[in-house]
Length: 490
Image (cartoon, rainbow, N blue to C red; front, side, top):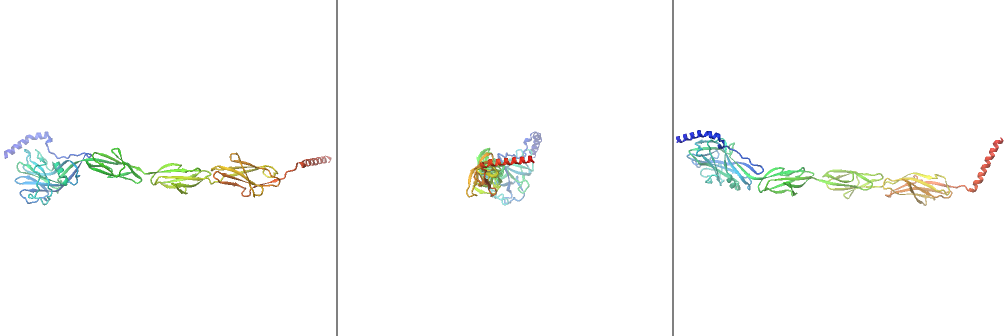
């Protein structure tokens, strides 16, 4: 036995340079990262662990604080249990690695032939950490799922790994996995000690399963549930996403991989491949249509305007000269305030109504002859009449020769812009003529100029007879001659 050990040591000394030249022969622990958009890796820690000893077949070692596996004159097996509920039950498991932290080894551990510790699948997870013994331990598969072989040089105080992918696939529907670890073959006596779940480096199971990624994005105006970000789903799962608009915004539509897929909310997406989903929101707006009748305008001027939901809009009616504001018609309802305030909670139509209720203006009346109108002398009357609203309809002169008992009207003619004229025919001696001017605009508003209620009045005076004119002339001439002679005689 001693000779065999010396031979192994000589071989080791000869083999060390080769080990230095080829570091790939070292068994170092490592973790393989998975792509986030193609798989998801979860790490679960043991929920129960203990070892059993063949020499103390009724003794439980679940509370000793470490795990022990040996192959001396006795056998020590380790039982480790994991809860798989954090892994989707329909997940496509791509890899599963059992990792145990090797604290120390003892006895004789050989690398040629290599001592191996195997991981065996156990379908019975009814055992408990403080109840399992050698005599009541569950049975397990006769062949290891994977083995760890001690190399020429090995490291302690590191995690050692076993590929248990098939075991996790088998156990996933039940939600619990138990692995049993023991030496599969052993040359001589030796043991290995691993940390239990009570230690800082707990037994763990790293499981990777295939997923498809869903990237959720939004435009301005809202969010989603789940919120925007990257999410991984088991292949074949259905993702449900709800669009949630902000105040004054509305959800408009979805785009899945840059394709408009409608406005169903929430939307259901079959995760058969990687997807990008974007929620589109739009600002809630309403239209305000402003119109005005003839005779004025508005501020803002008539037209159609778009406002955000809830906006307060003031509209002011501005009448033209000669008009005044009458009322608003807001969605068919009469309103009289000016300005009017409109809450933009829907589409609205508002119309400003103006009215010509301002009468024409009459000024500058001229009468010719102005007074002492001889008998049968025609009288010409001229006035200025203006209207800034709907325009003049007519201007008339009304006169009476019986002190207002009966009136005769004469239509006045526009002889130049805003200047109107008509003629009152002559009347006999001693006639009193009373008259006034009345003007109407096209909206029926009258204006009366009656000299403040006293009317315009003139009196027809008598004219001299032609038979008296010659004698009066001759008499005047004789008087003039007489006066002249008298001055010269003196």
